[in-house]
Length: 433
Image (cartoon, rainbow, N blue to C red; front, side, top):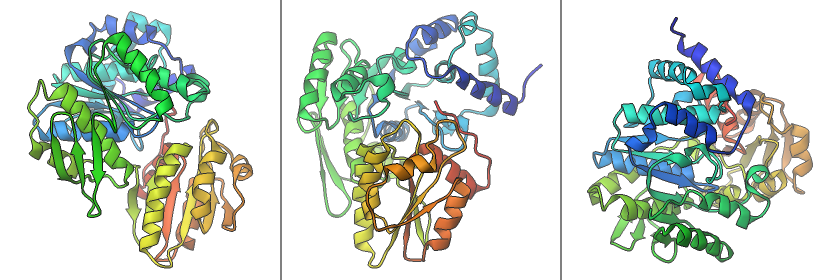
C-alpha cells in the first residue's frame, strides 16, 4: 500500500524523537545499502556559523544560470519540508518523497534508527543521483566533522565564519568550534575560508596542511569591495569581477557572495566554464527566503532568521541603515528564540535600536519561554509587550505599526517560518533538525 505524502511526512518528522546524533556511521550504512549515491555526483560543501545557507543559494543560482544541472540541499525549511531538496530550483515532488522514504525504510541499515537529518540527507543524495545532477551544493546541518553531509564527494569546500552556536555539540570555545567546521576539508580539495578572527586561522591552516587542501582566505587571496551605489567588486586570485549586484539585502551578503565566487574560482571553474554573465545573472536573481526578507509595506515588515549574537550584529547594521533613511521611523522588534541560544547576547545587540519590543514563543519543545527572554533583556526605554504565540505577537505588531514604521521579526528561523505561514494562510509544521 502506497502512503500519501502527508502520512509520509508525519512518519519522517517522527524521526525527530531520535534527536541529534553527531557521527557518520549510520548515514554511511544507509548510503552503502543504497549503492553509495553520493559518489555519483561532485559537490560543493558549505559550512559556517552564519551565512552558509546564503552562500549555498548563491552557488546554486550561479550554476543554474551557467547551464549546470544543479542540486541544492539545505536546512531547516521555512514552510514546507520539500524546500530542503531541490534540483534546478524546483523542490522535490511529493511522490518522490513518498517513494524515497519507503525505500529508505526497507534498507537493512534503517534498523539502526536514523535521525531525521540522517534520513533526509540519505534521501537527498539518492534523489540527486537519480536526477543525474552535474553538481550538488550541500549545506552542512551543524558543525562539519560529524555532520551527516560530510560524506559527500566535494570538489570545493567553504567555511563562511566561526562564532558561538550549538556549543552543546561543537564545544564551548571558538577554536573548538573552528576545529569541528574544519572537519569538512577533504584531501587535495580547495577550501575557502570567510572572515575569521586571526587567532582561529591556525586551526584551519593546520587542518588544510594535514589534508593538503589548497586554502583561500578572505582578505588574503580574495576580497570584496563595496560601493555606495549598492554594487561591489570581487577581487580573486584568477580574476576580478567589477560592479556586481546581489539580490540578497545586507552588507554581510557581499562577503557571502565573495566566498561563493572564491570556491567557484578554486573548485569549479577548472572543470566547468562559468561565464561572467552567468555570475551576474545568478547573483542578480538569487533568492533565499527568511533573510532580511520583506514581508509587507506600510509598515515595512522584515523577517530575518538571525539567532546568535554574530548574526544579530549583521542584522543591526542593516536595521540602522534603514532607520537612518526614514525620518521618524520606529522599530518594532518581534523576537522569539530557542532555549539553547545566547538570549542576552542576541537581545543586547538589537533591543537598544527598538522603540517597541514584543517577546513571543513558539509551540515547539525547544522554544524559550517569554519569561526566559524577558530575564535576558538589557535595560531599555522601549515599550515591552509579551505574547505567548506568534499569531498574537504579529497581530499586536501590525496594530501598533504606523505606515512609516519598521517591523522586524527575528530570533529564530522557526519563528520566521511560522510568521510566513500565517501570512500565507497555511499550516506550519516545524522540524527542529
